[in-house]
Amino acid sequence: MGNGIAHVTAQHGYETTLYDLSESQLDKAKNTIAKNLARQADKGLITTEEVEKTMNRIHFTTQLAEAVANSDLVIEAASENLEIKLSIFKELDKMAPVNCILASNTSSISITKLGAATQRPDKVIGMHFMNPVPVMKLVEVIKGYNTSKVVCDSIMDLSKKLEKIPVEVNDYPGFVANRILMPMINESIATLFEGVAGVEEIDQVMKLGMAHPMGPLQLADFIGLDVCLAILKVLQDGFGNPNYAPCPLLVNMVQAGHLGVKSGSGFYQYTAGNKELIVAERFR
Image 1 (cartoon, rainbow, N blue to C red):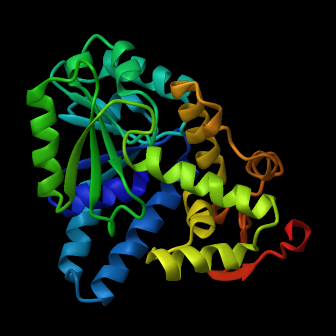
Image 2 (cartoon, rainbow, N blue to C red):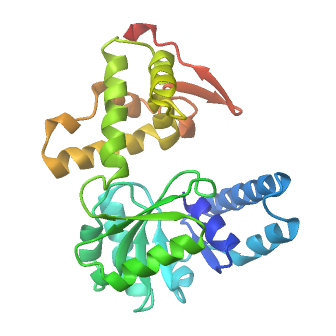
Image 3 (tube, rainbow, N blue to C red):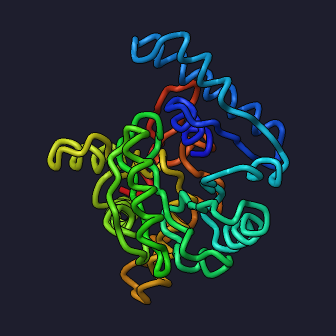
């Protein structure tokens, strides 16, 4: 998500610094951005000159203080883990200029909680981009309890300048997208777990019957099964409702390291860009 956000901001004329703890992750991000820009150029969506200008606007660093020193906006895109995000926001609050807006790309974690970890809760907001960022139009703009209208309006305007379609929502567990999506994915996994149908059959029903572009199990693989599990736990804790409890199959797959596309296997197997069904006979 981080490299996708950097890609989009730089492509639209903003000087952008991409920070990570690891040099190897930064190298990987740089290569990914270059490949995605080249793909856009091959399709005639941008020129080769725009590719070069975009890459020149992106700076890479392993030093957080250097990354945020002159920033007007910081967008955090770390793991979907509350403690990690709280720690990052405390550091950002110390290092970023006093007028800098601090945004999170979180899928479900409370913006109000993140804001409370800073001395600038009025300047903390959610910018939930969809993956892949250069392609997907939606940005969920999440107002924390203390987020100011000025900051919200500014982020709505920026999102439009990035050629996205922002939708303003309030800060409740899962916001809108994942409050609706994750129970559907969880129920799809339970349908597999209970032997009602196989992986491909479940996805086909939702694609052909509900006009979804991708089946829920394949979508879960693309999101990351660990991320799905983390969001469902946020929903379960936030609402205190056992109906949001993650399916045991999802829990077991994550514990076993089958995380979807990122690990090479989930409900489907992924090798060199090809997809093969995992045999699901044991669930039939």
